[in-house]
Length: 139
Image 1 (cartoon, rainbow, N blue to C red):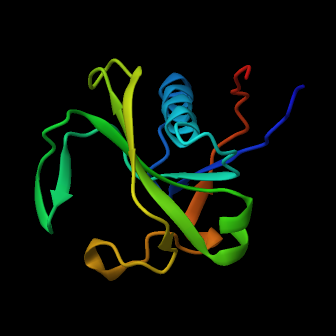
Image 2: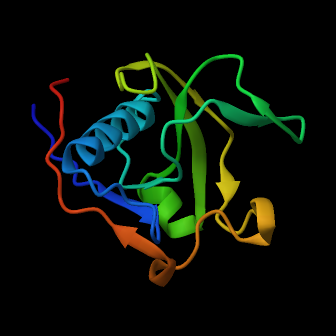
Image 3: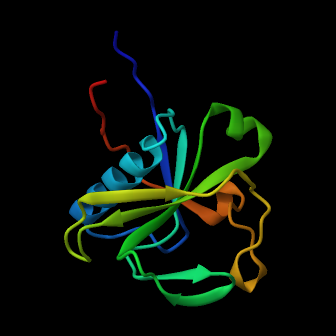
């Protein structure tokens, strides 16, 4: 049985990579990270480029796990409830964007605040939609 799952990818305004190859790799890592929980993501907000820092117990510090991409994703139910899952897609290296490990938080409200008081999942006018990229897998 085959299933087609259309996923839309977003970035905060001004943060979408200009390099099409990097954009494709980031989307691939984001998709694989969200799929780690075996759900069908519908919308993914890629929050950052690959980096090696995180917040642990409210303290911003080097991530002991390694470089990662930070993203938020929603399935169909979360689209309707105004909630999302925050995830880290850990990669082999800053330039080697092969997914090594994925971690996820519990479901959070889209109105959760991030640093500087902005909400983590803002309105559509504060986001840029990535061009359609075909990415899939066989189950």
